[in-house]
Image (cartoon, rainbow, N blue to C red; front, side):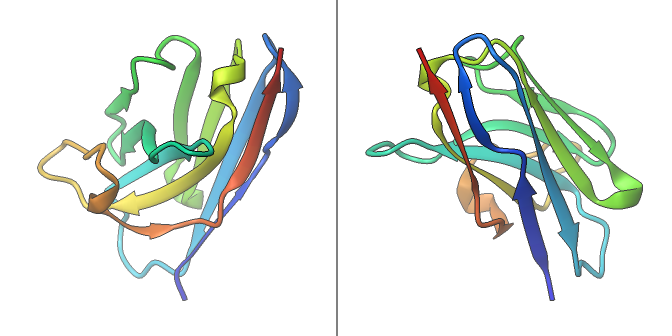
Length: 125
């Protein structure tokens, strides 16, 4: 049974840091792409960061330089280190897995087949 379980969310003040984790299990194949998406109330879900199993990464402009996506392939675990958090980072954060096109990972949610249940991040000013 495929499962993605996020953890590490919480409430912090602006300028603080959080580290999200996502443990993937039940996959009978090598995962090409893993990604973090987020969705704030009343807004569409957006890609925050994506990573290919060979290490190539991509970030949303709004988080580049503040967030770092990484993975432990042997453990099928995905991380998101979030520094210098802002109130506008407040959202439910989801991890997801998908297939790659060559060495590129999509930033569109339609290209991700499996999703976790989400972990809430709240940043207060």
